[in-house]
Length: 440
Image (cartoon, rainbow, N blue to C red; front, side, top):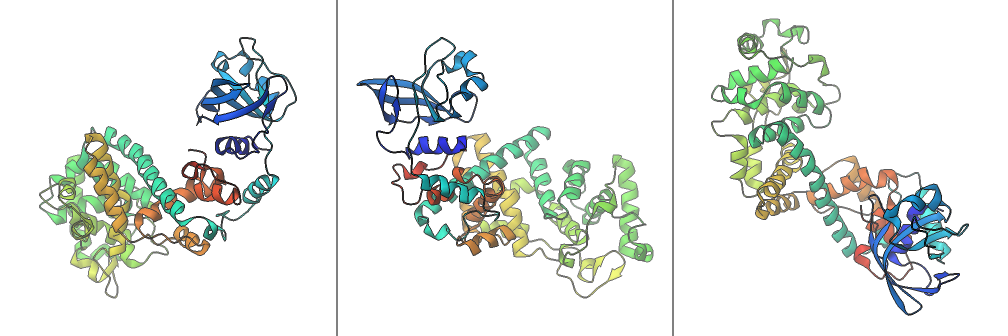
């Protein structure tokens, strides 16, 4: 038996009516199980019970074995004095509070099929334990749940972005620059792009924003990609030599420390996604008299954002993908999918944070509307869910699926998922379908 399973039974009242009974106090009627608590203290707050015609109000503590009360040290903790019910699977001991009061203790009687369903999910080796069963879950509940999880993901990203904002002295332009630069690397080159943004502050780039060549020199040089040992074919390449000369002056002027050029990955990437090409696109995006964040605020929908972010690399990259190495024509303009990923991962989350910080809900709503207007992402997680019977309709929904996979499915936290919970409880009378899961 697992304690989390007992928590789930209690929260959703999945036990036989009239089965709760204390050997001294008699039958126990549950008016409300209370509010689930994941922090320190009793498992459920504000429980209300009817015992012998008297209404009780207090907290509930749940254990597999009644003796766990002592093993966890609750008998010496006055924070548990207000517990009115001890729900257990195995009543192997009488227990008392720190104030000396004997606790009313009861064992729930439940359908064994629920436990069997739970074990099937927990023992399923698939990365999606509910794979093949999703179609049995209610479509409206799924849609409502994905909406909640997508907002949860935005809230989690809110905390991460607030940390960056604090490190930059509440500079919105610098914060967006770091976010956008990070996601210019996709997953393969995320780390070196992030290091680059930390070593090359936006304020330095802004001083040269009217000179694209100098912005490119700053980015390529600080990225460590002007290291002569990396591109031996570039020793006589005019574009490469010009960037190198520019960077020598700028590096000395600003005391810049380049990233280790060997951190960049080219293997198994399409030429259009090589960091050399992506850095030129980033330079084009930053070479503007107005700040990127101020321009983002002026965009009211996905199309205006797409137009803003659809930048092209320098003409040199029309016939190259690495310095000094000519190649068939390479698409130098950022593709729609790449642009959408920037909006999903950087722009929309920052707009959400901006609304939270300024207490202006319209910015939060705009972030959600933009995500809901974009097509779903294309990745292995979304593909797995689609094969399992759950195909997202928008990027907002695909973000929810990523959150589910990373924080719930991967750890078999099926009881914390409305989809998993509804399938485990299949055949049971659901009293509160909107709160079937254990709150995260």
